[in-house]
Image (cartoon, rainbow, N blue to C red; front, side, top):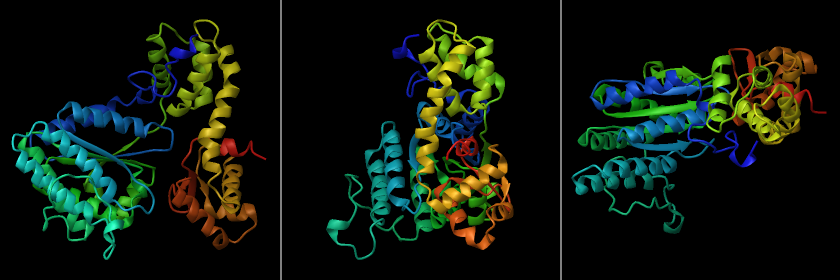
Length: 396
């Protein structure tokens, strides 16, 4: 097989394998775009799932759909403890530029950009010197008195309203995509929910599409009790056998290649149906196969290479972020779950390590903050990374 044309290499192909099996989410967003553009009420969206299930790829596809529909679209990736104003300003600047191409009144576009600039400039701490103030790169005069109070909740409602009205002028909408949404600061989550609530009441054409780890709905609910009414939640999981096979066969077919039935059996068993792993094993099998179709033996030969790459780039990079105390906690989780992707009882971890539960709280809380584990339900903890427990059991 020609490695130069490997369709499973990162960035290969026009439709990444990870998107297989996501037709339900794509179709649902198509309806959202149509309903909002017609002035009908529609909830914003939240995608949740473990690492490696293709949330980011799906988010990118939904953004492309919005752009093709003539919407303004911007995307940010939330970071722990980072201020929301800067990345949000950049994302909405991009969305406004998308709308400006179709808008007939440049002065109106500049007016909204002036409001956005005023919002962005509030990212600088009060009393900061001029040289320390962040400049958003918006080349219009500041329009004071709107979205610049310094209260993120008030400002976000006013800013979203301005941008949504600009979209309504051209008969489309605005979509704001937020990856790793669980990492937003509590005040920013609260402000975002308040803004979405206000917009839904006025039927303004702006939707938020968030993606995050499985505990994201709990984060939103803790911020605003009415959050469950603001968002449509979609759990993104591993692929079933049919969709997993499609993720392998469709890109291979475009290169006049194929996998035989035994190869597909082996690949599904090894990947567990998780899109990131399907791509990793598919790439390695393609590179290792001397002939077409790719068979079980090719998968067996390639598996160690795929697992070595996963050990470094997917598992190892996360394990290295953990402190010794956190690694002890993670290993205990792996041993109790016997390497399966299942939650474990937190009190059982204390018993397993012969420690008081209170002494393990700092390690657990830090792992939660780093996004390595999540609270599956009260009294239980689980890995955010599929097969992480299995990986840990192989480490000495």
